[in-house]
Each structure stands twice: as C-alpha cells, then as structure tokens.
Length: 584
Ligand code: BGC
Image 1 (cartoon, helix red, strand yellow):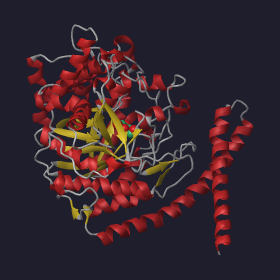
Image 2 (cartoon, protein in one colour; image 1 turned 90 degrees about the vertical axis):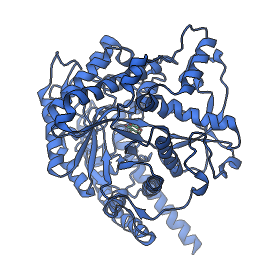
Image 3 (cartoon, protein in one colour; image 1 turned 120 degrees about the horizontal axis):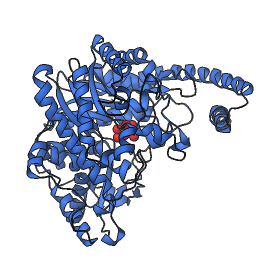
Image 4 (cartoon, protein in one colour; image 1 turned 180 degrees about the horizontal axis):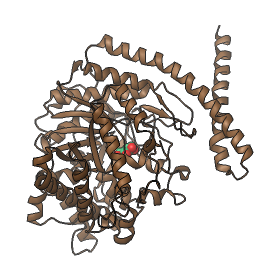
C-alpha cells in the first residue's frame, strides 16, 4: 500500500465537498458528524464475507492444484514473516462450525469464493475436473441453504491456477478470457441451480496494480505502467464474457444475477476551492473505481484515463497509449454486463494535484498526477492504509449512483483490522467503525442510492495477503497458534448482531445499550481465550522440548511472543496499580 503523507490541519476543517461529477447530491446539507437514527428498507440483506485462499487452508489436499498464491507465499521474502495460507483457518474442515457462527449472527447472506484450482487443478477444464473440490462447495452451499443463508459466490478472489501463470503469464495473456469463461461455466452448471448471486472478480484493481505493477501480491510482477492496464483489460473482457455466458445459457433456467465486486477509496479534494484539487480527486476515483466501472456501465475507460495515459505515453516516445483500447463492438459487448454492482470500501484519502514529469518513466501511480494525503487525526487501529473516515462511504455511494445510473448495489466488503500480537476481543474501534460506516450507508440509502445489502468484512481473522496474519479483520478472533484454529467472538459480533436484528439504529438509547452489553460479554470471552492460550503455550513448550528439529522462528512466534505479551499485560497491571496507589 502507498505510504500516506500527512495533511496540514487547516484543510481538515473543510466540511463541504463540491465534486464536479456529483451535482445532484447536496453535500452542504449534510454535516459529516451527525448520526442518523432510523432503519433500513425491509428485506435489506445482512451478511459477512470471506475468501478461499484467505481461510480454507488444505492447500494441497483432495486433488487441489496450486494457485499463484500457493507459489508466491512459499517464496521467501514475499509475505510478512514468510507466512502462508497453507492451513490458515482450516475452513475446509470447519464448514459446520463456521455456519454455526453465521447462524449465531442471524445473517441473511454469506459471501465466499470458490478456489479455481480446487475444482480445476490446472485451470483448464479439458485437463481435469476435481470432483472432490466440487463436493466441498456442494456441501458448503447445501448447508448454507438448509440454514436459510443465501450464498453470494465470488468466482475469482485472486487465486489463479499456477499452471495458467506459468504457461501463459496469467492476466497478461488474452487466453485467460476463455479459460476463465470455461471455469465460470462449470460453476454455473454445477452450482447454479442453488447459487443465485455470482461475482465474477473481486477487487480487480488489486489484481492489476498489486499483482502486476508493484508486485506486492501474486504473481509478483513489476510491469510498471503497462502490466496493470493489460491485466485490467483482459479482466474486464473476461467479466463481460462470463456475464454473456450466463445471460445466454443459464439465466432463463437459473434466474440468478451476475455482478462484479469493485473496490474504491473515496478521494476528497484537499482544497475545495481549487479546481485543480477537485479534478485531481475525481481523477483518483476514476483511476480506481472508474477504471473498471466505466467500461461496464458506460462502455469505455474514463475519458480522464485515456487523456492522461495517452499524453504521458506520447511524451515517453511511445507510438500508442499504454492504456489499451476497446473496439466499438467490444464497447457495446461490455456495456451493461452487470446485474448488480458489488462495492468494497474501506477508507478515504485527501487528494491534491501533483505533476509527475513523463521522464519519471511509466507507472500507474505517476500517470494520475496527484498526491494522496491523510488527516493525522483519522483513527487507524490496524492496517497502515486503513483510516476510519465514515463520511467518505456515503460520498462514494452517491458517486456510484450518479456516474453509473443508480445501479443495484451490494456492499461486498467493509470492515477494519487490528494490528495486535496480543489478544483483545473487546474491539471497541471495530464497533465504532461498523456503527459509523453502516450509518453513512443508511444516509446514502436515504439519498436514493440503491443499496440492497451489506457484507461485513470479514467473518474470521485470516491470511491477509502480503501482511500474513499480522492484521486481523475478523468479527471472530482465530487462535492461529492452536492447531485446531478455534474461533472466539469479538465484541463486534454482539454489536453487529444487534444492528441486524433491529435492521438499523432505532434510537440512541438502544444503540448505546448494545455497546455496553457487547463490552460486558467480551470480557468473559477474553478470560476464556487467555486460559486457552496459556494451555496452548504450555503444550507448545512440551512439543518443542520433544522435537529437536523445530525451527528458531517457531520458537519465537509460539513461545517468546506470547510469553512477552503475557508479561507485558502483567507489568502494565502492576504499573497501573502502583499509579493508583500513589494517586490515592
Ligand atoms: C480484499 C480482501 C482483503 C481486504 C483487506 C480487500 O480488497 O478483497 O481479501 O482481506 O482487502 O486487506
């Protein structure tokens, strides 16, 4: 993720935005800080999400092929502490347990992804279809339906079959479109009688930029300023092809919907009186969400991307733009290929105009001619890129409404992480985040944005890509040191559950009560977990004594870190007691 710069305090006091594209949303009437008490429309769908590589584990079991993430994580130096998703939450073996958690939350839907190489080990249908993989997803889908939970299924949450990467260069190659279509077609054939919500791609921005520009994600390529545009081009075409396949072959029988899940941070101009900043902020959003949404809803890349990348490419002496073009047939084939739009949203940036001379060389980031800033007062409990800025969510949702003709929206990802080695189940900041972000979504619905459902990200703590297990997004805490990967509810489980059962925020008194009750229950879960962790540490010590081959790293993560944590807690308690005594 980008290293944010710090915003000067004077800019922070700005309360109004006038983004050129958003004429019919009157920002001035809406104070950023006010809370709106009210409920969601009847039938609003509440859910949680997860993804295959991040939670399933069982990376080489029951005939599964390797994905680019299996290979990437097994290379040294790619992921924090060289962690892998080999076993992760062991979700593959814990379907029943996890569905019990969904039931506990009284959810309407569960968003998960299918691992392509689990059901097609090489990624190529004619090579082999792995029936054991199909059986696993059959089981998961059937159990969800038995429990009256609607499955929302993502076909591609980043785990491309490794064979397709090795043979063709993955999303740099046109042939991915047909391979992906064959895979999607198989999913419609085998699961489509029960699955009615399909998401082709999850967050293609990350696939393109982190997979092919910065190389922070698998397949780890650094094809700056061209690789990401090419990958995105094929992904958009693959999405459209799959939508047409569903439309032509399955829709009338199965009566489902096919969408895509796009991520977008909100970009707010630093200086709202500066036309340059206003334009830069709009450019930020167009290079992020618009890159994918504009072709799908309006038939082509955003004009501003064509202009900026075209101009820079020419200045760099290239005969054609680094941004590929769609033919007119392709434009009409792609336009309108979205029955619903999935929106993943986590955070916001302040944006200011900044020129990058073409001589800097090709790069997605410098193509945009802007700088990203953050307000130092924004809370950032976990991931360094994730600041809690609830009002940005409402603005983004209104932007989608205006730019793309008020499509049907499902929020497919929204949540916050904590960065803690030591355990804390009383996640106050997550309750606050959900409360405020969900409230901004409610305001957006009142503004007329067509949001049909919300998916909290995520059900469990899990493998966080290049950050390994260092960032915890879960409503449920997972004890990764324990081989059984037990799950413990954080306070936000109780809190989210109340929002769901009230379908919103009925009144202030009740919402405050939820918070108090959630904190009460989490302190007893905390004790339970602490006791369990002590047992695990003791068991690990015994295991290490008997296993001379255990590595030094294991020693550090399994014994030294928890012991230091426990000591830290003890010392802080003693120190607090000492202070209190002195005070008295
Ligand atoms: C990804 C998730 C990830 C989250 C937080 C999203 O864009 O789709 O898989 O957990 O970011 O890093």
